[in-house]
Amino acid sequence: MAEREIFSHPSLARIRRGSSRFSQEGVLYIMPSSSRIPARAYAYRRDLRHVVVPEAMIGIEDSAFRNCSNLRTVVLPKTLREIGWDAFYDCCNLREIVIPEGVERIGASAFGCCRNLKFVTLPKTLRELENSAFMDCRSLREIVVPEGITMLGGFTFSGCENLETVKLPETLRRIGWGEFWGCQSLRGVSIPKGVTEIGRWALRDCRSLREIVIPEGVTKIKEDAFKGCSSLRRVSLPASWRGRADELSRAGIPESIRVYR
Image (cartoon, rainbow, N blue to C red; front, side, top):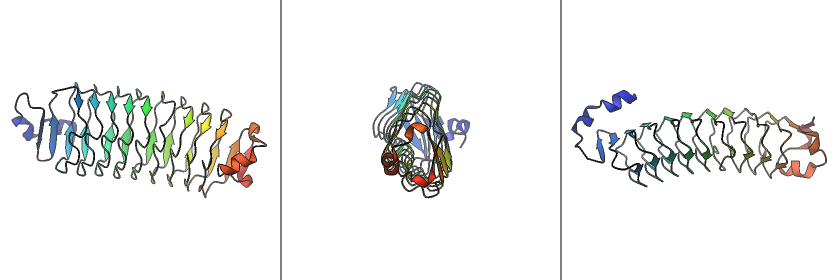
C-alpha cells in the first residue's frame, strides 16, 4: 500500500477529533496526542497490517509494535529521532522499512526476527545502531551502513542468512561481537581502513566468504572471528602480524591461507 493510499483510506474519514489512535480494517493511523508512541502500546496486535506514524512524533518506545505478526507496511515521519529496543521485533510479515533522515538511534533488536524484511534504508543521520538491531532478518540481501557510525552494537546482522552485500562506513572503528555470525551468503566485505579491532565471532560461519583484507590499523582480531568460514581461501594481512600465529589461529585463520603484504 503506497503512502498516499494509507492517508486516503476511507476508514480514516471517521476519526474523531482528539482521538489518539484509530484502527479499522487493519489500518492504524496514530493521532499525535504526545510526541512518543509509548512502550508496548500496540504489541501483539495481530489485526494491524498498515501503520502510519504522523509528523510531530519524535520517538517510538520499546516494544511498541513487538510481534505484530501481520504488519506489512510502516510509514515513519521526518520528525522521528529514535526507535526503541524491540520496537518492531518479530513483525514477521514486514517486508520493507525506510528509516527517515533525522533518526539518530535504532535500539537493540528493534527489527530483530523480521524474517521477511527484504529492503532496509538507513539514514545518513544515524549514529547508534545497537546490538541485534537486524538479527535474524533472513530475507535481507543487502545493507548500507551510513557514514558517522563508529561502532556496531554486537550481533547487529547475525543470522541474516541471505545477506550477500554489506557496505561499511569509513568512520567505523570496531566490528563488534558476532556482527555477521551466520551470514552464510555473504561473499565479501570490505573492512574500512579506520577499523582497529575485529570482535569475537564477528564473521563466524560466513560460509560463502572467500577472501578478506585486514587493514593496516587492525591491532586485535578476537577469538573465533572467522571460525567456520569454510570457503575462505585468502586472508591478506599487514606485515606487522607476522609472529602472531597463535592469535591468528585462535581467530580461525589457518596458516595455509595467510598472505602478508
